[in-house]
Length: 124
Image (cartoon, rainbow, N blue to C red; front, side, top):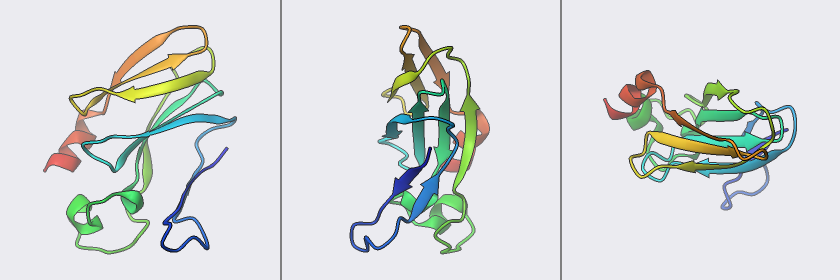
């Protein structure tokens, strides 16, 4: 399945499309402190952590340190989490910005962290 991102000022086409799931995507959550970080959860039992620079409120050069203005530069899946055995219906960011939890249909809650290397890319 594909998650699409639109700029409502120019709705003729999406600014980005993310794959990464083999079945329905149930939830998408932006990190409220670092809005280039995004979680997707789906019925394929997968949680994906993304870096979506093209949908971020910060300028691309500021995020990547390159000074480039390429809209797609830096958009990537950071990590695929396959900790659940059943459909993942909910994901939530914690208040400290680097920890998130996911909840699957069978009631399992899994807590994960943004990889340390990605934290340093954002903070430094």
